[in-house]
Image 1: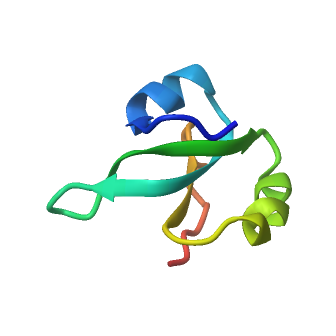
Image 2 (image 1 turned 30 degrees about the vertical axis):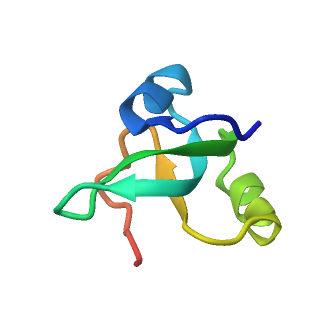
Length: 75
């Protein structure tokens, strides 16, 4: 699935309410991910976590929907 780098907002629009595994990403000056290569997407977070070991280098996971108000985020 990994192809050319593209904007994260474009990826999120294409895969709404899904977990995204993005590699080789670029950030802006405030460290927000702006571009990258989508290598996996799923409605199930566990599917994405299971794929993590297949990739190295810069990797990030993002959710393309809105998180619940009581959801916690761990860095």
